[in-house]
Length: 162
Image 1 (cartoon, one colour):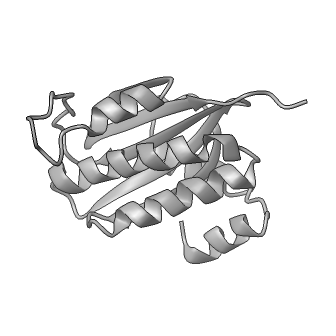
Image 2: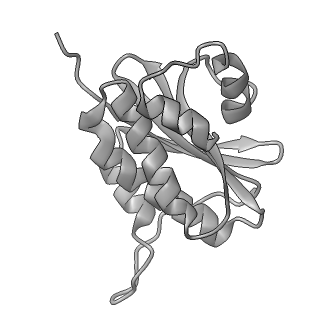
């Protein structure tokens, strides 16, 4: 997602004409049609974690899903951090989708075919808790194998507002 698109999302403009193409890029074949709230290809660098957090926060705020933003930001931080640390490609793709009115799916795609593993962190270790945190915050999470790598995703469920 370009900086212009992010600015327009911040200003509340819709990109309905571009949604089908963006959806296909973000989700790939075989994924149910959902509303794409935002997506961006980021370099596989630690600095991309902050850009992914911003994307999630803006995408959720644009659809009045602010109640999911704090958990969404933590989840995307962990998923992008894992991709930065373990994937062996130059970039990762982050997508925020809304399959249902109260359900949001945050996904990170990379070109590594190695699936993530939930591990017990060693005592005193500074890392190794990310997927456990994702599992605790998300309603559901998982991995989809892709011909070129994988998509790791997590779902959050909000509440209907009357």
